[in-house]
Image (cartoon, rainbow, N blue to C red; front, top):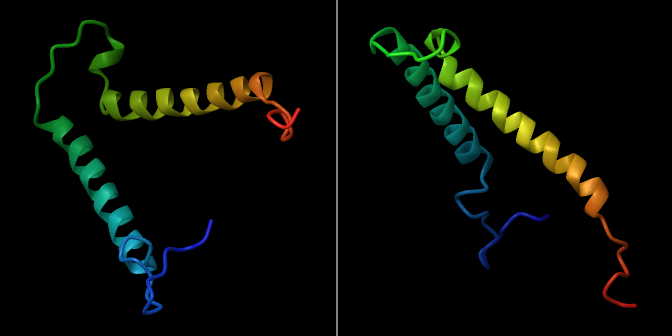
Amino acid sequence: MGDVVSEAGEKHWLVRPETVRLFWRGGLAVLALLVIGDFFVHGHPYFWIDGTFGFYAWYGLATCAAMVLLAKALGVFLKRKDTYYDD
C-alpha cells in the first residue's frame, strides 16, 4: 500500500512519519493517564479480579488480542482461492 501523495509531491499529513509518531506518543500518553487514574478512582468490584490494578487496561488488551487471533484462525477456514469469482 503506497503513501498518499498530492500533486505537489507532498505526503498527506496523516501519513507523514512525524505525524504518525505524534499520534503514537499521544495515544500512549492517554493510555498511561487512564491507568494512573486507577489510583484516584474508587471502584466497586463485583468479583475479586475486576478490583485489581489496571484491570480494564489489561483486560481490554487481552480481549483485543484474543479477537485478532480468533479472526486469523477463522480466516484459515473461510479462505477462498484468488480465482473464486472467475470460475
